[in-house]
Image (cartoon, rainbow, N blue to C red; front, top):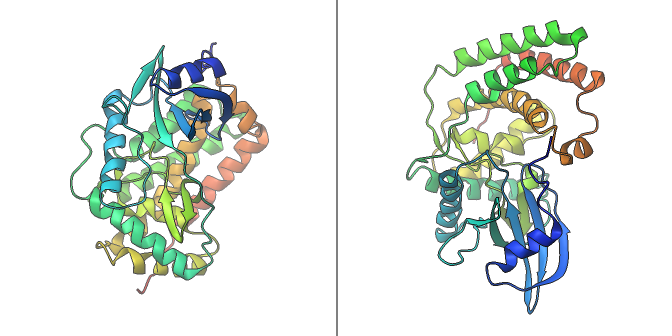
Length: 324
């Protein structure tokens, strides 16, 4: 099977960029990205730029452009997102069969989250993102849902026989039980807003004492807690203290529904299930076996089932308690 980026050679990457009026100097560096392909290119008499080539058949043009609009809307509100460059009055371009966008290169380091002040600053900026996110809904981009992230993910793994026979029954049982419990929890209505969607430390660059948010490729609608819980680490007590500082900054700019704290383990479980199915769906792309050599082994699936069992226990525990 031909993988989706088989035709994306260094020459075609440079040709695509040059089709927009730039002159490449033949310096090209592939950056760490799996779902899409992202390159840093040297440009004559210009600072390097970043080119992002989108995976076909994932997002529609309308969905990609809506993500671009959201990041520009954030920047217009002086929030440190990085929108694509508008060239010839467009942000999404086509070269041969590949859709792509260009970005300014922006550097930074990983935030130091052991500093409570940094957590509060991070909370303030996410609060500002959500303040803008609440102003209108996405029209084209979907919601984070148990159906897609849980049920569809589970069924894909089962239908395509990724789960090893010796743990098939264990996986089928625990995943079914988890989704039944999650479906019941999610019957309670929750406010859905525009989100970053994948707001973990790999997508936050710290520069000039403030966070800069990158890679809105997973932007969706969903509960505000989705953009907060991935900042947490350590034991329950540590997570409670971290969230306290994050929400202290967050609430400087927008309200937070504390009932959403009960969704942290729900969202974590869905992310775990979705992640395994995501790798499985991309397994024919050579970048994935290289990046995840441990995937699709007996050891991997045994650990996955164990992780799901741990999530089953966490779903029955009270949510973390925060006193801001």
